[in-house]
Image (cartoon, rainbow, N blue to C red):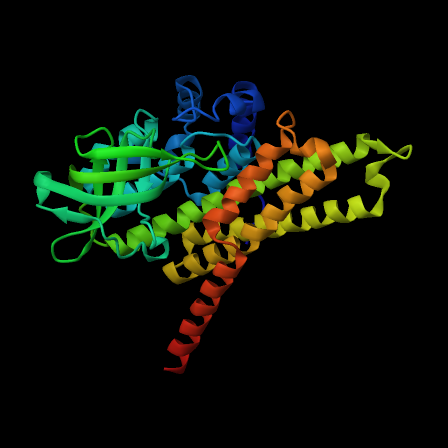
Length: 378
């Protein structure tokens, strides 16, 4: 197994890092915290011109036909820059859902605009009180073909308020799971921005009242949706690795220059221990995250889900603690609005909330292990 990045992957990483440093520094991030879309046309179009919005889309539909390992090099840089905007929602979530669950006609209709950044997509699959039961949505689909309508509500729709097209899970009259394309500005669609602790991560509640929809006509909706969910979750892990890595760098630099008792605070053992624990958490999460990306590209569905769950277990609490420790290293200044370190802390806190904490993931891993043991004994 080759653990080194290819020359092309390193070039992609460098290009994205330079672009973000030049066009989207933390001053830009702060300016987008209260913006509904979380991005400007100039920055979004710049990312599209780099080709990263279409990395996961097949080449016949304007994409690069690459995998999650390639995408991870981009996601980690976005995390390092605490970049706001709908990148993960559109370039990972919506593109994956259409590419995996759509027919050739669906892909031809939707993917070129998603890949080019001309349209922004969002995935709407979670419902109040049943986020873990995304396989069995309560949103109801009536009719068929171009006469399909959706009725119900989705919550925690990442970047839902600023999206152009929504990919929505629902069930038809027979109770079968389906994924549906919905124009976000169509009659019958109401989007309400939801407050979040992290202004770089926008969420919305989306209500459908006989909203016009079109069903994606792929062969295996459940399998495609499961793969999409795993991709979006591991994308959050890798983004978190980038944010935590940068938070560690900022904390270490501060520890070298901040002086107490006529010494740099980094010379004190307590601060050194904090930084060492932060490094351990970052590297463990990075290894688990990149392995999960590889599993999304090359492993079977069972191993993909196991690897994704393991990555979430490593990152959800571990990377949050990196953010909290970075605040602690900075002392009182870390709590102030003027210092950037709180942006990283909030990004990592959001990851923990989305993942549900390590305990939830470890419980899922236990279920996977027990199911495997039961299958072997049978």
